[in-house]
Image (cartoon, rainbow over all chains, first blue to last red; front, side, top):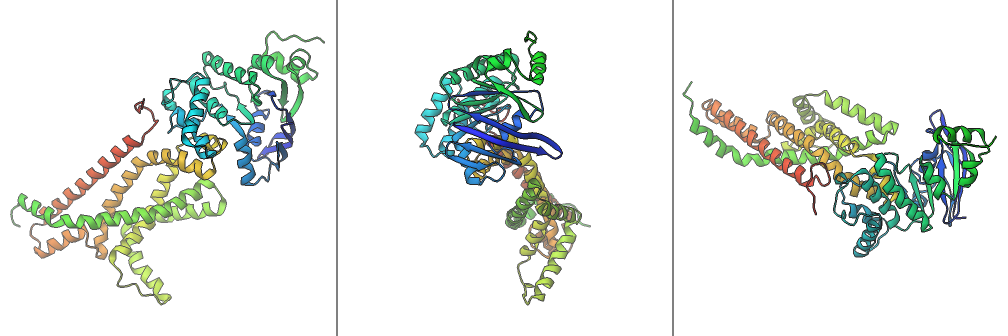
Length: 251
Length: 235
């Protein structure tokens, strides 16, 4: 097993957002987390990368073992250097070009020599179809292009795992496809990822494991086939019925 | 009263010109020391830890209510009196030291607000993206947040500089010989003649300084606005 978290808990004031959540990810897995708004999916992802400080829980990631609530700055940096995060709102560095957005984590974060970093960054941008946008600033790019830079920034550092936080939720509908296409390609290459999304088709086609969360707990997990055609839990069924108009299940 | 002599305005300009340096030094000193306090204030308010934040709020509140001229006198009389309690005599220090101290105390809160607003104007998501990219918190601040915050700060900062320059004219009241101070001496030496010409000359100097400040900051803002809207493509 490459990666796992156990007993992750997190409350914002009185609102218990995560209630002892476990998650396991094997190398090459595409784990898709589904669930209604407020179910804690995004918070779970953010706790994993220490963007939120969990109240409790443990993280095992390769040779790293740490408490999520008391991790040292050094451990946090180590986890972040082995992983990458793709944000809902892209969060590109507004003062840097597309190319610089990608090289930043290499030259500054990982001390890769500049020339080498530029080579890697160009390859990553080529891969997401932005060969003609190296020198564009984020404001000059469409949402879909910005998110593709975000993905290039993630893959350029060759992470062991990429965390996607609703990567298509802020996009215009006609731009969603271009981002999902790239994510499908990455999955095809065996890149390990955890994806929080509302794209059911993506989950059905690409996921190796689907995790359904609701009310701060993992309600059910399984292969896409198990979850989409034969969910065991009532809550999962209700959710799928609401979201998939043609969802049928046998009683 | 003697007739108005426009040409004397020019004479005043020539005589006051060397004292612009004193005014600029006063501003520079205030920006350095007031800026240092301002950074601490901004940090205390952003970090939201209860004790530093309360201190910063109280500091801002207290200093915001004091007119500059009162602060000048409080510092001018108060600091030497206070230090004398510890056996330190600073009565013959340069007047500029007191002026810079007083204005640093006053403008620290303004500067702190300028810094804080500029910092908050940068989307916090960029800090998150930076640390997730493997940058340390300091690198994320220094390389991503600061360059953008600095651009946001420029217009307010330049406004504040102009204000400081104008308030700075009050420093003559404790005997600092800057543009205003020397202008007053001139009037005294002329025994009240050419008073209007002298004040007009001073006004022109302050107007010119304001113009230069705004010109410099306008240019800076334009040049540093990399990646902001309407910025031209580098490609």
